[in-house]
Image 1 (cartoon, helix red, strand yellow):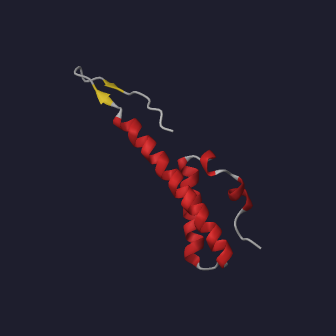
Image 2 (cartoon, rainbow, N blue to C red):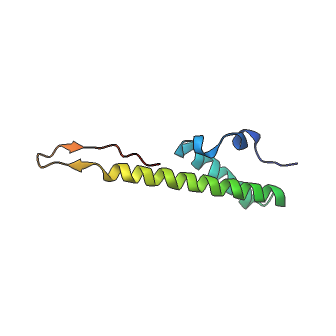
Image 3 (cartoon, helix red, strand yellow):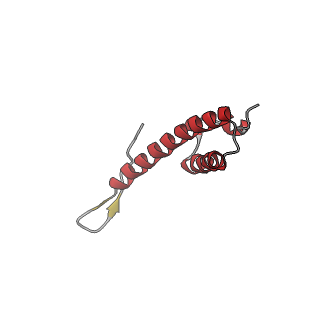
Length: 86
């Protein structure tokens, strides 16, 4: 029987905020590092962790792009333009 948390598995990774995904990724890493998960659970945890890592990376890249769009005009005024990142 799998030890993976059903609530975590039920939530699609792309529906998680960066913070939620990072917390779940930290939990996955801790479970893998504990060595207490079965081989099957470890494989499932690793796959979920890979999805979470990719999701966090995408969110970070989007945030970096938004920050890069913040500009300072000649009058010193700071403006920002929203960038749509898929």
